[in-house]
View 1: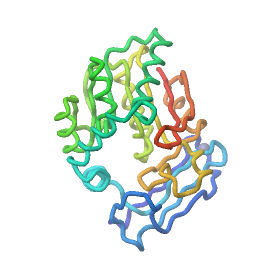
View 2: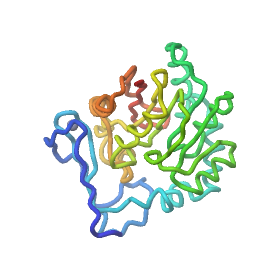
View 3: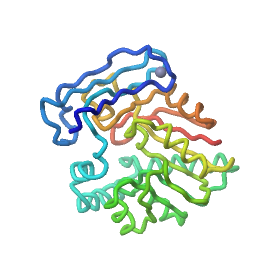
View 4: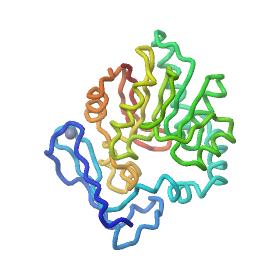
Length: 271
Ligand SMILES: [Zn+2]
């Protein structure tokens, strides 16, 4: 553990007017065990009094989480991921966050038919269920991941995947649809990722993103929206501010409760 590490975030609205929302001296009961020593587990969430954005503050270095421990602890490695993939792919529509997400996007595209969609760039493809759903619909799908084993795993599933940090990724291609499903909360500076994808978009491209909704705080601090790997938990205002500051136009933004029980904000935006 790097002693010098200090996570200190500010709100996207640039207000410093915040108050303590939650503090933790041990992990929430169902949070993945990242093998953080008991005496080192101390973290808190602040809430912005202006836009209600919730952001983490702690001394625990999570920088290497996504390279090794995250995969090991969250999915018990590749075999676990494959099982998880099959399980999720086979969930009925009513119980599937993923199937409802795919439907949400297809419905949106049907209504907004000026956006002609042929290809998808999925940033942080995770278990690959989302990307695979679009491959099954004969879309041209490209996934980006920051873990080499994940890239191998995704390629094995037939999902064209690249090992890259999106902020450094170079490619001349333009994408009609770019998606960040539960990705932005995991990074300290989500605006860097969003800024980086603008060069892959045209005026006819759509950005779709999903982030955890801070409204879950009403259900208490054990909620998964507030697990340690979430640096940011968004409000409708803070998500809108972040997106619009970067020059995107929001077409639709909404809060939902997903079949898994997750409180989520999703939005569609264009340049
Ligand atoms: Zn704020």
